Length: 229
Image (cartoon, rainbow, N blue to C red; front, side):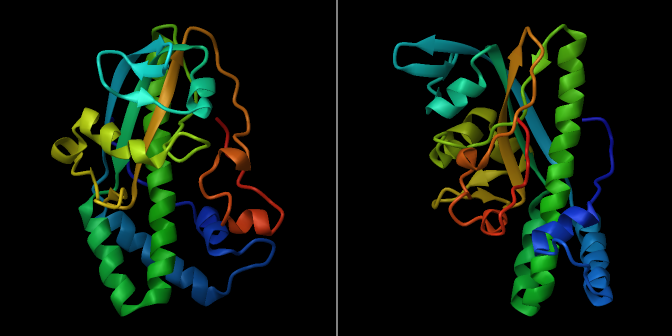
């Protein structure tokens, strides 16, 4: 990846913390600035991308040349116009995992703020990777869909292990899947982006396509995050 500094969107952090429609106190903003500085100092962002042909069989959609089936109707619909896809894995690095764990023991409130800052940072990093990959594909006359991660709709989280094995993420970027199926370091993302010969129009994924729909605080408040595909 081209050299780029991470960034943390303070407004996004406030949204994660539940400050919607009313201002945060000065103390909260000081805590956010402190946490943001620590995250940016400790983060060692790394990523890997790999392109695969897609193979459509009677039993479903597969990555050609692998034993990886892309299960579920949601990912099949997302890649309906695509003959290839990009597998992406990205992480802020193990130092962030250590920092968050230590802070949780010593100062839970600070850890919550720090966790939100780290979430903003990994999203920024993935957006930057996607922008670069999108330009590379468009230079070749191809177009990308948006990111689609395990856990969206009926694309199961259980594919994380096979996803990481195929990309060899543990060796290449220090990212692995725990016995319980969680990505470690936690501030990491895996996603699939389809490659199509026609321009892709973004669309709202909607709450039905999110694995957090049942517990989402935004839905309880009558709003949504508004992510696009």
